[in-house]
Structures are given as structure tokens and as C-alpha cells.
Amino acid sequence: MAEVNPIVRSLAGKVFGMELMKGSYSEAAAHFQSAAALSPSHVVHRADLARALYKAGDVKSAIPAMELSLSMHAEDIHALQAKDSIQQLLDQLKKSPNYNSYWAPA
Image 1 (cartoon, rainbow, N blue to C red):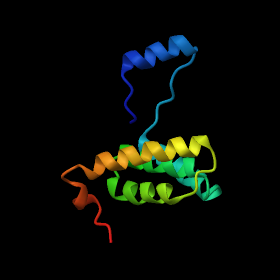
Image 2 (spheres, one colour):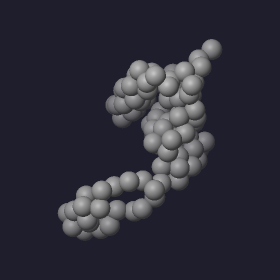
Image 3 (cartoon, helix red, strand yellow):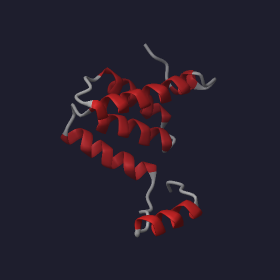
């Protein structure tokens, strides 16, 4: 399950007047995959898919998804922010000693 501290969950419920939905990063990735299929040129969907895959622990799938989102044209400021966020995540991942076991670029 996507982990949100119980105190944060409770506080958010009080501040926003609703409970946070429970879910998992794997579920989120499936939904972002559907969104990306419906709008394949939308960078934000691709970046969100990459991030959800990474957080779900599917790094081998996340890295190509990150690379794809970074190769796309950013259609607006949100897409630019998404690409910047993914670039930072990928840069961090590349510094990991396990990076080559996740992904061996051609």
C-alpha cells in the first residue's frame, strides 16, 4: 500500500474534511498506464507512470518510462516540471551502485 503516516492521514482528513484514499503505487501505475495509452503524447502521464513504477519497486520498468518521458516534447509548464522531477529522480538512481543491475543502456 502507498504509505502515508497515520498522523498525516488523520491531519489531512481534518484539514480537508475528507479521508485520503488508500491505494498502492502498483494500482496508480496501472491507472497512469491507461492515461498514457489514451493520450500518448502527454508528458505528465508518462512521468507519473514512471514515478509510480519506481515507487512500486518496479525499477526495471521505471527507467525506460523515465527515459521516454524525458525524450518527449513538453507541451506546457506542467510538463516541464514533470520532466525536471523525473530527470532528478533518474540522476539520483544513476548514482546508485545497483543502477547497472536495473538497467543496462544500449
